[in-house]
Length: 429
Image (cartoon, helix red, strand yellow):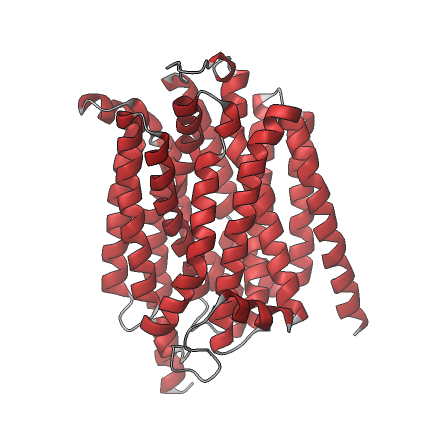
């Protein structure tokens, strides 16, 4: 083994460790936002139709910032891009603390948008794990970094109870409490990245702004052209994007559905101040944390399966798991246990799709264009999440939780058919 190869592997181990630790810390903030954000939106507006507003803001901001983050990474490296996003997400956590204090829905939306930049950084971190990775371990390394968010993301919703107690001691509303932990997590992630990502993996990989294959001012259209020109990249992006949209649509409305089923959501009146009590918040936190565990806890296994089974087989299996999740969610909408199991399956399907699809994209495109296409992938993920979150509130109000799940099933089946066709074509070739 050459000394150059061993040095590269040593750098890769450090990169994976650093990214994993930063994901753990930033995940606390993202988990709390998912669990409490939709309830805050309903509380401040008095309408369940606005329940997806915070998730929409997070998704839109993530979509709009993905390509600028990719551009910044090309010019200044992953460390600067990821750290800058987490700094702004820390400001967003502060805004989430203040929104219920001020009773301001606009402050809530602005804060959620800033937290969306932290989400965009989390997505970019998984691709940063592939900058120096060997091809045979790309799925594993990507999965390890995705997995690392598990501890923080699962802890986030379960900090609702302790956060409510801490907020009471500080004279803050109960719903402000979890975001005190979010703020600390984002700041910690910045410190870890500043220390651990030296030297920068993207610069070491030779894919920085000086690369001949990357335009000096990359635009969304540049990445789209690069992706469209490679059918494998287009398929991988579609799997990741569609699976993310389905996951966000169902997940973002689950807290509202559970609160309504517990007898709280339907009690809102315009101008009223009623909101879910602490016991209901804790129950919702538990369900969402189990869902997030499904998303991230088995990511290393998903990565290894993707390396061994092949990307296409794993992507096809992911659509089967997602289909099972939404069918169970529709059939068992009035059963808390069934909804919980459906949310866990939803997370597992998302994990399989995201890990295998992202690895497929990373392999399909090379050089500086790879970072552009990765930025396009994350932009479209955010857009799909925004559409899913915005539309899910309206669908929930009109068709209920079963109707929302069945609509998502149509998208899952369509993507599954495309992947199956691609796999048959690959086998024939």
